Amino acid sequence: TQLLEQSPQFLSIQEGENLTVYCNSSSVFSSLQWYRQEPGEGPVLLVTVVTGGEVKKLKRLTFQFGDARKDSSLHITAAQPGDTGLYLCAGSGAGSYQLTFGKGTKLSVIP
Amino acid sequence: KAGVTQTPRYLIKTRGQQVTLSCSPISGHRSVSWYQQTPGQGLQFLFEYFSETQRNKGNFPGRFSGRQFSNSRSEMNVSTLELGDSALYLCASRVAGVRDTQYFGPGTRLTVL
Image (cartoon, rainbow over all chains, first blue to last red; front, side, top):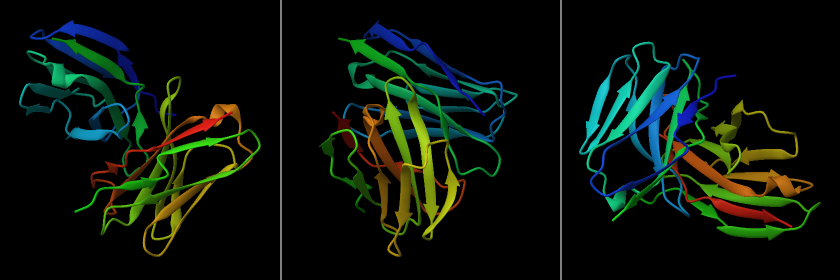
């Protein structure tokens, strides 16, 4: 069974601070996705990374896939209140249609 | 293009009852997946349907079942409800393939009393 461990579970920071969320596994994933979920809504895909060592940027968000494709990180620069939400990482194995999710990081950005 | 829709959005049932949840995928999407989300376990995969056939199944008891119709709409059924079945049930659709993006619906919040 593939497992994804996310840390930290909860994060409360002031507007303007930087933060990093981690997603780790002992298994290799063929691709890894990051989602953000707001209360009462389903997760919304932010990015998919597929190549070991890959770095993708989405405005103030930087996503990195580990060289061995077992871990990933999400870095937010100068966090804003609009970044508040539950951040989820999810991985899939080669040829698998099933996504394995981490339990999420609940981020609160205080104005 | 309309997103994934789920009905009903909220549902309250009592132990022992059964429930049916509905999901309408994005037009043109043939794959529908179902997930259960709880505070303790997070998001867990239930099953996936593609062209009316179950293509993949998670580790849930047989009380959880689903089906997909020819128009790609999907339903999931939970029989003999237990308190632990209280959760947000999410449906996601994608065009077809492994590399296609999944789009999630807003979910159905099920409360079992």
